[in-house]
Length: 370
Image (tube, rainbow, N blue to C red; front, side, top):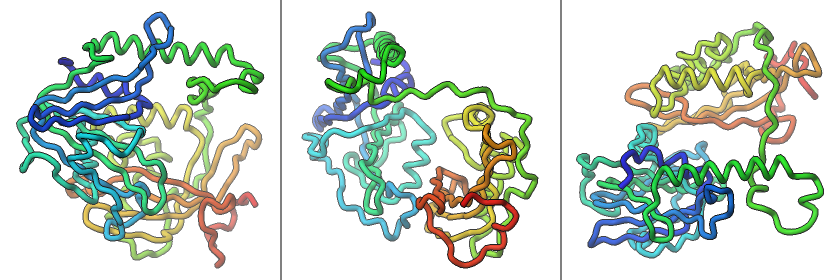
């Protein structure tokens, strides 16, 4: 048995679930995943599958939400449901999956999901030491697509490779060996290497070029980050969005962490993580919110679509560039407060967001890209 199951989720980066096998009599759920593993010496492993055996299962629950978070819960048409029989003989094929253990953020996703159905165990067993969450990532994000997830309360987790117990430290070294092979592959790769022959698995993981250190002295336009026209949207839904953009402008990372939390981290850890990202590779973009296009609120889920100006620092133009943009926010209620769960962004000029035909005075004076 793995002493610290929290070590498992990072090792399942880009893992693909291939099979479940549920034994009701033994209350055991076997989960087979194709993982990124190489032998410690760097040579390929013939079968990189890892089997996770979840023992002493007392409760299994399926829960679902729209893959497109702008879909209202009342309009969510769930076309496929996972049945307990599916876990005995998995019929849904291979899919990308992520796993979390004793994760407060995954509990938040469960609590704010649109549909929940108990598959095993009449009542949830809060005494189980392990609360495992498996999210099956959707193939598409269309209006009818769903994000399927399983919650399993159990007593133990064991890892096996080809039927033999897999030590977590060995698994970690195999995972590191895969990534070392990935780095070596890209360090040696030339443009001609991809012209012929089969694509190596490493070619499906594209490395990013290390970014130059950002110029943190750069100052974006001094206009208010959040200044909207009158709207029917409730203030309680607008508050986290306003805090989000004001905190970015002020570099108030504690305020940002409160508006956009990750519950597996303390507020201080979340603030430090956001600061590292937003004054690092992601530095140089600011949004000036000027209009609410539409919104809805149902139960503990809400969505707000805003429109405004995105200012971007560029090396080519010392003054930066300005672009009209539209951002869709996924809001969830945490206890008595609305927070940002995630968001998506589009740009009317590029066709990824709707254009407004009527004049908008807030566009004036920004020298928008045409």
